[in-house]
Image 1 (cartoon, rainbow, N blue to C red):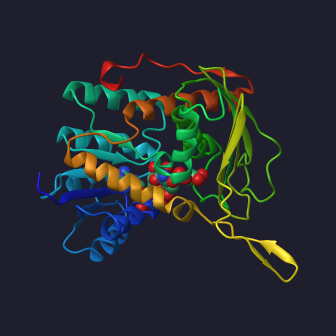
Image 2 (spheres, rainbow, N blue to C red):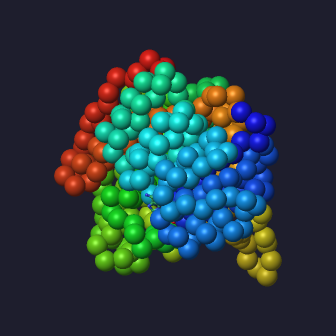
Image 3 (cartoon, helix red, strand yellow):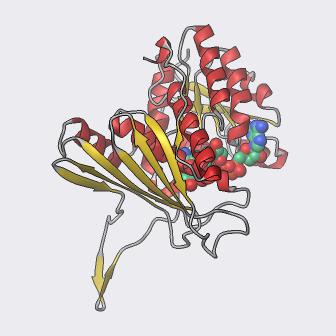
Length: 337
Ligand SMILES: NC(=O)C1=CN([C@@H]2O[C@H](COP(=O)(O)OP(=O)(O)OC[C@H]3O[C@@H](n4cnc5c(N)ncnc54)[C@H](O)[C@@H]3O)[C@@H](O)[C@H]2O)C=CC1
Ligand SMILES: O=C1[C@@H](O)[C@H](O)[C@@H](O)[C@H](O)[C@H]1O
């Protein structure tokens, strides 16, 4: 492998274009050499802003392009599995945006492909694991700083949802972050899911069940509650309060600066994830590039993507039935232990 990692980026929409910019500006030791998107104008515009990257409407062609040594996938979730298969066929390291696959069956097939290769090549873009506040909270919990964790109280709010967003995606695309964060912070699996859906906000598009309250039970006896509200209108907020036997700790207040003036006090609320998690996306990319250069997955792997998909599936069943649903999970393969 040469010292500068050649990356193919599959999907050049909001996240793909953002990752391309980050690779150029903040990540050393890597460059984008090929980009793919079925939207020909969009992919050309992204390629034109790069020095010598080839533009493709077929992801397989981008992955097979000269100089490609690693693949970043930022297409919609249902397209991830096919792109991963093309990358694994060439034994290329992958950073795949979340969700790894929308369903657990697809994630099982990804793990089976890695098992056949005898190595892990896929990292999943659960970037909160690289966020400084989440890392501090994990260190505190691991050190027993607040005793045995009893609750995680989570709030996940987006100012507005994109036009393609569905009620299922509140769980599979949004709460999937809390699922991964809870598994990682607690070092436990999620065992059951319940979902409450109040009367939707009048700000939600017709038919969208927004907001929702998702309850996760874990293998160590903790309970995680997640308010997911993707049309809250006022900004982007991701908060997490851990409550343990001997204390509590909260992250995500975002009060970097509080201004007191004219008889009022206050601060700003980030408007979206590209701002709130900017540093986390950078750290995630640097870590993936460094890991890829050493042939290692340096973050959440396909098992983590599978576990999250299994919890999402139980969440969808719970949301539709109104009944607490047990998470069905396969045994963890030796490759991921
Ligand atoms: N980690 C995070 O915080 C975030 C992650 N995401 C994830 O990133 C991925 C992309 O989301 P966005 O950029 O928001 O969506 P987007 O709709 O802005 O962009 C998706 C792009 O993929 C292209 N595309 C569609 N089918 C494709 C295929 N088969 N192969 C290649 N490209 C294809 C579309 O033409 C579009 O340009 C999703 O998996 C999403 O869940 C999205 C937002 C934040
Ligand atoms: O991953 C993300 C989006 O796909 C999702 O739609 C948003 O709700 C999340 O806040 C964002 O981080």
